[in-house]
Length: 249
Image: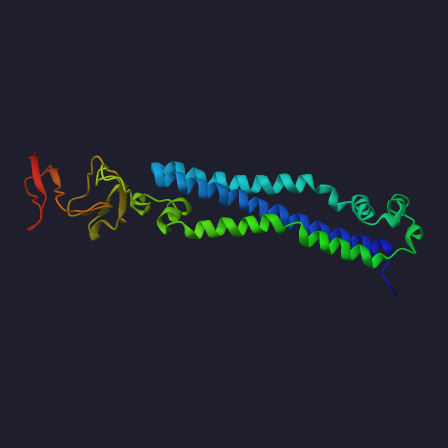
């Protein structure tokens, strides 16, 4: 026994709804990726603050969800049989409004002689063609994302303290070699504290016995550290390039 016209119509509705859902999802991904790419490009020029990069992750996620929700709301009528019937009537003039009449009256005798199998073919074609453009845009965005330096993407994808040197190295010869600049502090084992990093530190007050490592993008040649310590019992390790500024008890 062949499916009834209404069963065919429901199948067409399901196909069209799937196509519009995939399209909305793809446009949402494009919106999120576009914001991430823009953020990575800007960050490579002006080095965005850690808090800003954290916020941009949520903004991009929100933009993607908002785009998806807006498109799903716009296409919400695809779930109604009447809208699907109208969509099919627009593509098959021979129906002559009989399909819409059948839906409105609930009497499928109006379309008994129609070629119901053609509805499924039309709906399948429409469902497959709907997401082509956003899927292509998604692929392009992903390719651009892969072409960016790994450090630039990582600073936006997973921002964390001390990641300023993961950005794109500046080619400006006049720029200070100490910008960006990161201090990594490894406290003594007895404290059971985890290591931490500080971007562009002005002052560091580590626990006595900590190992402090300074890292930057520029050459270390000619860079000498000076420190101020607050205990007469502590001295820089032998062979260290650190020289004291003053001592205080």
